[in-house]
Image (tube, rainbow, N blue to C red):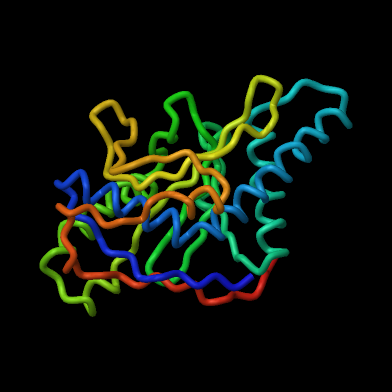
Length: 229
């Protein structure tokens, strides 16, 4: 699957209208990829349930999340989207329920995580903590950095998925993280429940009058990658 992404203007982090417009741009530009991720999850979550039915045992959420990650990775690979394990630093039991996948492209990184009781899982590693905070640097430089320098920065996004009480896929949300709060929960510039791409395209895409029109831009362009196991 080849996905072409249009340039996305980095917002003014202190301007609500600019952040709102940034959200609209991201949802539109990454729409085909988000649709694919949603399809992968809706296919993988019920298949992960099949293991427990086969073994005639109760659902273990940690095992379920790991199996969903594995099946989602296979689904994305079948569509020529390379997904890597989020962390490969050894096994820690507290990591298991929120184990994730990474999708990396030119100018962006997307982490697919299972929802926790707090919504977006708290950082359980230095790498994830840095991931949650790195947009601050990009957005801070957006208004005074040349495009050449800004193109080296990475836009970090989160896809967080959830299940209902019957362990069925309950959808996903897209978030642009800002950093961590004092209690470890994740602060976001914006977060939005994902709907089908056709619904996103139907929304108004007009630039707010108060938003800057000459913001430097970063170009995010997916280069097709061969699927790998």
